Image (tube, rainbow, N blue to C red; front, side, top):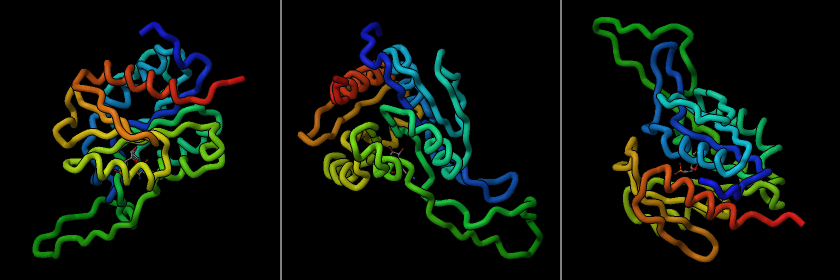
Length: 223
Ligand code: C5P
């Protein structure tokens, strides 16, 4: 991938699932292999960008030349993103963030006792990392270009168009899940102000490069 379309740019990416602890040995998580986000991180590095990849728990190797920060929960992911976003030119949110977390984490393993009721779980809402960053002053003034992902099982165009507006991002990348989860290839549909365009089925590596070309073409030109 020779065109250095992102030379001099700093790209911040979230990838993988988040893990929300119930007690020290149990938790809830989302299905996400992290493959798409890691492929984007690698392609961005190859396109000349300085890349920071903030990842939930995944079984993937860090792409060469990429700075990786490992986190577990949505709140940790948001904190890491906020620490890095001030220096970034592009933010790409591919992580499958858990929408809710247990309201409290038990300090010790919850014991299973004969004849006792099953534990009840209370949930609270997690922060929306993408929407938080997309509504920050740097993003709203055009210094930080934000890209979101949406996995939908149906009505992709309708749901993704609405999600793009709700999240406040100029570009939203839709795909039909959950059949793409963990797979090596995918079909992506790009939604922006002028409508939507499909990147046909290809490997996640090839799609990552195509997506970065599309992003690079949308970045404000430096005078
Ligand atoms: O609302 P939904 O989870 O479908 O939105 C998907 C997009 O929003 C993805 O880009 C995902 O990384 C991001 N997101 C986030 N924080 C959340 C939920 C979603 O950054 N709490």
